[in-house]
Image (cartoon, rainbow, N blue to C red; front, top):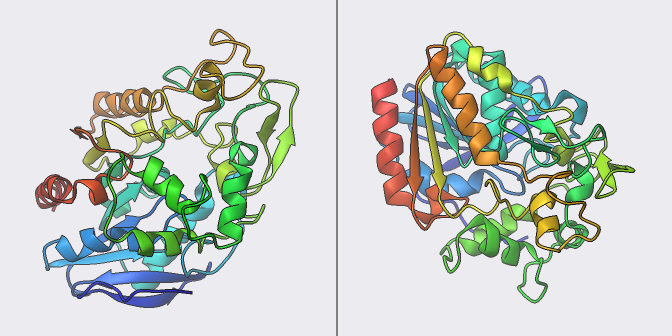
Length: 353
């Protein structure tokens, strides 16, 4: 498999923990202030390379590949625990490295992992950055600011909602652009705001193709349902871990101690949005999924509004957050608008140190 060299200043190592072996990108002195970066779904740590080499040199920056992604050990996900397999992996990771307090950034799925970590181990987190983070009430199948399920079966969430052709393209290692749902095309259409194209596109595609496409990991299994759209969450895999049947991070509002929070997102994000192009409620309204019962029965999920509502509750409880919205930017602000993101992130880290 094609694997371009890392950017200058970065190194890679395997970190053996009590839970799994994690491939990790590293930059900076071990005596520096630790910053940990957690990637999103169908991606890997190398999506953070440009950010890592741009951060001030006094930070000790670590970006692990999560289980089943990149070059880390391929282990399944118990979706009935939400994203706790990933957050507990992170606890084992920092324990193996002897890190007690650190800044934590999570992108997309990684934002849910980071939030779960803060719920379970709040004293470890010096600051929390939510980068285009997923809703605290999961992905799909719910509505309202509190993540109320659209039906008792949580239909429209979980492993059965993934595009089967996209999953197959990952499994078959498809690198080209002929297939409309190839990893390359999906990344350029949805990870970024078109017409943005990253100069590191080939690297990113290779990392996407390392995703373990298997019912135990990505996207997971499914359960047939009577409710529209006919599929509900199974019990294994990443997408099921994000189902509101198993993921509810409302407890974040009451954590103590309360680290400062930076929330950064693009205004043109098509993945995490109040009108997400990956939400079957939205796709149903657009006529892309047949049999849609209407918004009264199956409303769209207001993902961004759900994040904001929870962070507002966090403030009421004594916490603090700032929201940065980058214009004409999609789901990857750190890649699409690196200078603006770096300015906001480094200022936040400095104030939280």
